[in-house]
Amino acid sequence: MKYFYSFSAIAKREWIELKRYWFNSFIGIVMYILVFLALFTGAQSIGQNNFALMDSLEGFLIGYALWFLAIGAFSDTAHSIIDEARKGTLEQLYMTEIPFTWLLISKNLVSTVFFLLLFVFIIIMQMQITGIALNLDLLSISITLFISLFSLYGIGLILAGLGLVFKRIQNLLGAAQFVIVGIMVLSPTTIPFVKFLPFVYGRELIMNIMREGYSVFNFTIIDWSFLIGNSVIYMLVGLYGYKLSERQVLKRGMLGQY
Amino acid sequence: MGMVDYLQVNNLQKLYYVNNSKIKAVDDVTFNVKAGEVFGLLGPNGAGKTSIIKCICGLLDYDGGDIIVNGYSMKNKRRKGLRHISAVLEGNRNIYWRMTVKENLEFFSGINGISSSKVKERINYLINQFQLQQQKDTVVNKLSRGMKQKVAIAISLIANKDIILLDEPTLGLDVSMSHEMRSILRGIAKDENKTILLSTHDMNVVEATCDRLIIINKGKIIAKDTVDNLKSLFNKEIYKVTLMEGPKNQLKERLKKVAQLLNYQKQAENTSLLLQLDNGNQLIEIFQLFKEEGISLIAIEKVTKNLEGIFIDLLKEEQHEILL
Ligand SMILES: Nc1ncnc2c1ncn2[C@@H]1O[C@H](COP(=O)(O)OP(=O)(O)OP(=O)(O)O)[C@@H](O)[C@H]1O
Ligand SMILES: [Mg+2]
Image 1 (cartoon, rainbow over the protein chains, first blue to last red):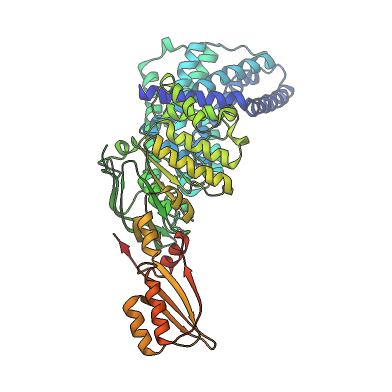
Image 2: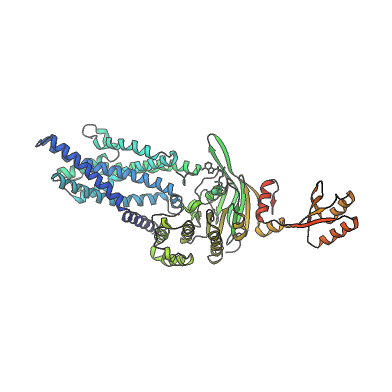
């Protein structure tokens, strides 16, 4: 029960912050839509009635939305830990008898719900703008996204740990964005090994769901194992990496300073 | 709970490594805090107060010795120990400034694993106790520094843990707020039956709130005692006596039999003596002596020292350890 109460405290905090400071998120989304609009009109004027381009526009639409989401997901963990270190509240979170790891995962679970809604919202906006019809199988999309986002949280944890030790989170996040772009464009059909990278397999599944009408009910054992395995492994790697940094942080007394 | 040593700090040692050089921030510090006691850590800047407090609340790994909280070592039973500890660290930063007072109280009870229905009464109690009724729905960011500090302390009480650690609870407060804070702290110890460990560099705060204290400097304990003892130990009757001429040797010998001659200074015009007596009545004997020796007195004044003066003296003569 203690774990449940701490989870709901975190959920409530996130809700309060969102409610009170929704404008920041709102501006971010508007900016995103505007950039998408510009890119889309540009692409349209280049290849009118070009079927190949229209086809890849679908991929671009989904890929762009996923990229936006991915950036949000992995910087969310890193930013919030660093932010709490700066404010001093991180020390308080370390002083509860509930393990800090649980508080982190609680926060990730809550963020995931937010990201799911955000994804559906921007996809619908984009479909309206472009007139492109996609298969909006909400159940399949939600489940796939829900699981695959945790691989990105794992990466976020590693970055957060490094950020606490080296105090260079902006540079780290900047560099990591390029990696994310890579993850978003590399295709596992041409380079098979990239499906071991975080989030890639989930991305492919979502593409298939939205473009080809694939569904969670058709997922093969391989699909499930890659999807879940990828997230579990990257989350564990992330937690382990964070613990390594944490050991340094506790030795050097840097939990409360950034 | 009897007068058990609720919190034990044994031979604590904390080193920092900065640019390949080693800083001994806490050097062999030992003290015990009893249940229900208010205990002070007094020391100048850089003495190691914050380091000691962070070691106790598990935010800092230590290099030697151990810390035992209600029987649990903070080294390998950290989470069990944390069941008994809450803390307000330097600069009341344990609050979410973007949430209201009430939301903060709810949040911190929640992450400590307490259900929101169970804590409702306690939240109202604390809001009343700290006179925060008008501010309870205000975003913390908009409160004054003193108010924030009150909120921070209220938050540290929300989970109802037994030991409250306070790092510099009066730092940056104006005089009246600082006084209010002192009475709040005394109230917490008494009404809530909490064990309090607070750090400060302000003697007056210790004098007003603490039962016992240690004085630390450069990571080392230089004095450990009850506040009362420390005051009376140093506040023996000390008198500065100014004489017309220097006392002859014979007088000096006779004086030494009655009182302790702390200092003797011969100046061009006069001579001043610093005498320490066990009680004021001995002054009569001293006067008698002067009269017999035919010495004329210019002035006599009592030298009093508050805790602050004692503190400064102790820092000057570090070796002077008073371990009782
Ligand atoms: N995280 C850290 N890394 C390196 N050195 C540190 C760190 N924290 C403290 N120190 C050093 O350790 C010593 C003790 O510092 P500490 O902050 O514990 O003292 P303090 O009594 O709390 O001082 P203040 O009154 O300034 O708060 C100082 O020399 C300080 O410079
Ligand atoms: Mg300090």
